[in-house]
Image 1 (cartoon, rainbow, N blue to C red):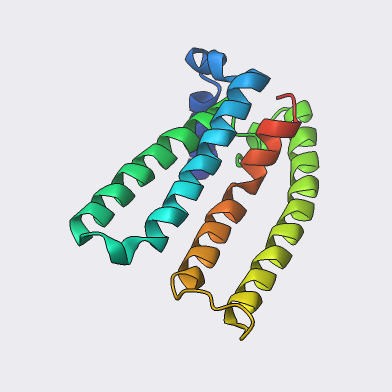
Image 2: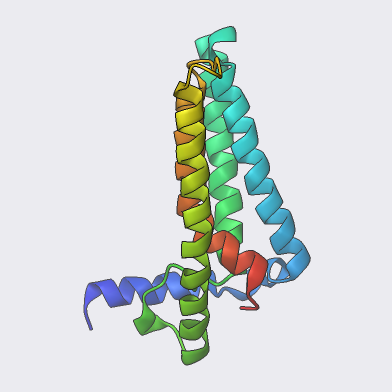
Amino acid sequence: MNTSLTSQQRRAARLDDPSMESLRNPRARRLLAAGLIAILVVEGVLIGTAGLMPVGVFIGGMVVLMIAMVITLGGLKASTRGVEELSPEVLDERQAQIRGLVYAQSYRVLSVVFVITVALMLLAQSPWWAAPAEAMVIIPVIAWQLIITIPTFVTALRMKV
């Protein structure tokens, strides 16, 4: 057995921890997903107003947001048992099927998010919208973070894992 598979098995066991059972219901998943979206919104506001606050306040706010994001995303991944990120070798047949469905739906959502991001970036650069310079940072940063969490969102909100 190679070390990568062993590492994946340990990760699968950690994500399937019975102590996380309270997070594995639709209401808890919706709350965690809403919390993660709220964190991304607050991050966008914080980046957008960075020029209006002292550097220490900005950095402190970002540190708090990153800690909150890690905790919330970890809870969201635990609520889905990590089927969207674990290798197929450590998943059972049902979980592997769910993983396939998750990625099919995630690619559709990703396409929409990508088109919206490109449209917003082009619009922000156009002479018709006098977008602040911060918009050119906020749009790709939030879009990138949203894109890397799409499979987790799809699993949490659409699948019964």
